Amino acid sequence: MLTTARLRLRPRGVGDAEALFPSLSDAELMRWWSHAPHETLEQTRASLSRGDPAWRVWAITRGEDDTAIGYVAVGQKRPGVSEIGYLLARAHWGQGIAEEALTGVLDQLFLAEHQRRVFADTDPDNVYSRRLLERLGFRLEGVLRAEWETHIGIRDTTLYGLLKEDWTCRPRRT
View (cartoon, rainbow, N blue to C red):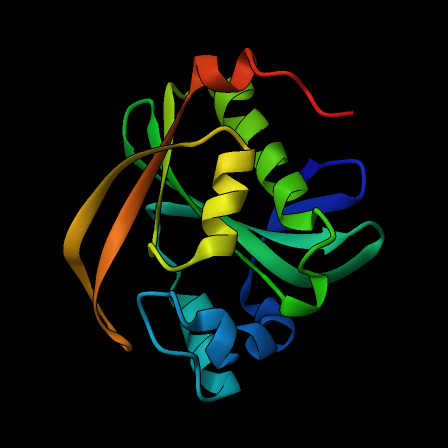
């Protein structure tokens, strides 16, 4: 479990399906994902129960309330290099929650686990996600054209990277 000033990040489980279904079924929120929004709660339960052993996923909760409002996922791609992804319920956008949750996970990856690089893959039109990555110090490293075939068609992807030294040497916000 990871904690930040306002948040607690704990392992996400099947029991989070009801709390996460509204987000995973939200067409606007899921627009830039590689898969379509979930149509049923059962689909969300099945997805969470399958999981993927290559990925660690933390549910984002607020303080003492254990209800998942989103999650952060990390997949190790090779020694010292991980990919990061995230989702936050729309009702919690604009409050700094995603940035705080990602900061906690990045501290874990770089400071406790000594990863050397973390990267994120996002749709070029997902402006909010791109801004968040840039605020955290990620740098745009490239665009892969026609990389994904998704529920909204063939999409490019933007790759953002962050190195350990970029993270540990950056000025901390207070």
